[in-house]
Each structure stands twice: as structure tokens, then as C-alpha cells.
Length: 159
Image (tube, rainbow, N blue to C red; front, side, top):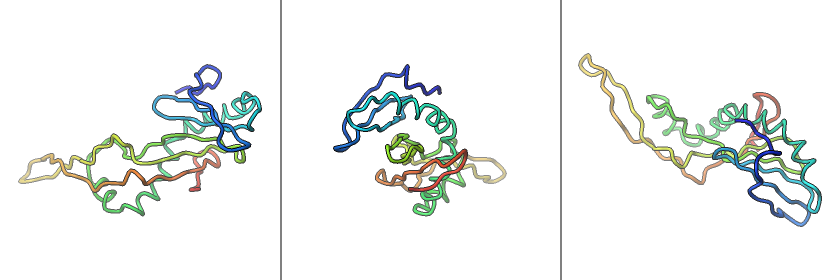
């Protein structure tokens, strides 16, 4: 997807605190937030975030993979089942990318996809036949989320 703050409509703008304002954009189902000093023109901050936002968007699968380590450690039963299942949909998504005024690097807000169906298909060989069965997976609470900061291409850290 092409991320362009000049073309995309700003869907929100508000004060975060006494000195910081924030612009909100939506691309697909994900949000991008760009902060700037309160009372200042946001355009220079949007221009500065333009290229990093596109790079972050294009590298989002690596951000999710980095966050997955935390989710795997916290929910091993879910991932043990998921690893052994034939399930093409990944359970984690990023909700938003944020550019904070005090840190120009992109921050991903990553959690379990609320539309994820906690069932999977397993293929078992039974009596010489391949048989598909559907089974329930352990749930990941919707309150579990992590912030992952992009340091460089394919390089992330938990915040």
C-alpha cells in the first residue's frame, strides 16, 4: 500500500498533552499517528515521517515477527497448537504505527487480530487416509499487546 500523507485525508487531530498534538490517518484498517508541537504546523512533521512510514509499512511483517516472540513466551499453549495446525492466517496484526515527537522512529502497536477465529485445521493421517479436523485453540486475551520500535530494516526492539 502507498502511504502518502499529502493525499490521504487526516481523520483526526487532537492534543495529546499541554505541548503535543497528534495527526491521525487511516490506511486500510491500520492507523498512523504523527505527533508535532502543539500550535505548530504539522506539515513538516508529516513530511519527515513520510519516508519512514512507508519503510515501516513495507517491513511490518518483520515487526509482527519480532512481537511474536513475546506472545510465544506468554501463550505457549496457543502457539504449540498453532504451529502444528494448517492455518494460513496469522493471529497477530499491527493496529497502528506511531511517530512520537520525542522519538522519530516508527512504533508499532501489535496485538491479536480481533477477527481471528481461534480454531484451526489439523491434517492427521488416520488408517492411511489424510483427514482434516477442526479444533479449538487456546485464546490470547484481547488486552495483550506490545509496542515494537523499528530501529532499522528488519531490526526491532520491544518498548
